[in-house]
Length: 335
Length: 288
Image 1 (cartoon, chains in turn red, cyan):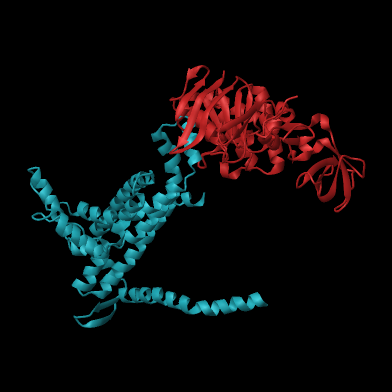
Image 2 (image 1 turned 90 degrees about the horizontal axis):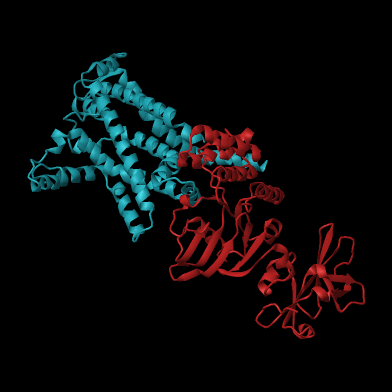
């Protein structure tokens, strides 16, 4: 079981309020991702749940029990840190055994859990090595192994993939998702990378300066962002925002259109502009269009075969049915 | 070509310094070796010719030799134990965030700047004097008989004085080591259910292993040759005659340069044995 409830939780460091009153419920077995730009308080929020920071006011409940004042070790949560925080002088086996040794679990049970964790994480051949002799991905797996053996109510991940190279990150993303499917334990995952959030989460919590901007499934956030911030943060490349008279045509202060919802052609579209930088990914090409008179640049996603060059004048056709409309306060206008 | 030129130019430029340092080391060493095989009594006939290993045999067979080796090792061992243990504790204390941290750190380092002769005299006259010393007053305040430190507890007194001098050095090195510990490791251990004591034993102390090694090695080198503290306090009496002090007495008080030089060669051998022994025990901390 691992149902975590935050009830009007606040956190201040001295006079600066990092987290204003915040309510959030994380259901048992859910994979929840906290996402937001750096400094938005997502790591602080995770540390509050872990008990590494004390809340200034409010209550944290784990499975209905008040855990606000419970020390970290007694909360039944396991954390994977950004730097992995492995103990460098201990072998992999001892690292994984450490929490069990502290909990006073007997040797035979310790070994049984180490063996099964090592098997699940492909670490069997490395158990006698020191962390310094492992690659980044292997260290990451040891950190996860150390968390698994505690059989926690929930796992907390603090930007665990940010120290890995791009290829490894994609691999580890899959492994963590697999692990979640297998263990069906609550997981809370903090990241600044919206791609990680979109690919892994059951539920995404978008944070900005301690406020929750929106909570929802990845597709909910993609299809109906509640405000301009969420609209700009979720989705890659970023959504295009158009203000002024063009937006007024749709009875909105700002309209947003995703790059994948604009068609590019030689002529015949509603908007026109000049091709600036184009990024070729092979499967797709992103064109950055200037001189449209709508916004500084409009980003368009096109098929990899489309071959416009720098300086070409092109015509754009937005799909008005999937256009997002926002009012002067930046909030979404529904229907 | 250019690199070869600059390389040979670099060698020529560095030569004076290297030659000076080499001479600095080799000349005294050669002279010590030379004198140790001679009967050389400056005030009683001067150079009286070669005597083979006579000086070496006399030095070791003297009744003062083994006690002096023992005294040296006791002082080195005692000071090392005190400075490492209290150094770790002080470093932990100074690592805590507190008001006036900068000033406190400078104050802690201060004893290291005091010359050994001065600090030993201050301890001898201000603290340990059995009539006027602060310790005597303290003992009297509790109705106890003041201790004449330097004669009744001579060894402990000297260890205390030298430890006071070297504690800042140990604290400083251990403090920088503690500050380099990744705080996430301590947090991870906290989440793993380790008590503060377990965190110290399993995380902090192993992390300090290398720094402790450095402290032990460097201090040993300097402590084997302490002299001023003994000279101005006990003058080598009350069982505080170390090997260094014994050599000093042979050369200057007995005016026997040959015998003293032989003692010097023994001191070099002892230093190397101790160093090899320490490297064996703690050296593995340095590779990892």
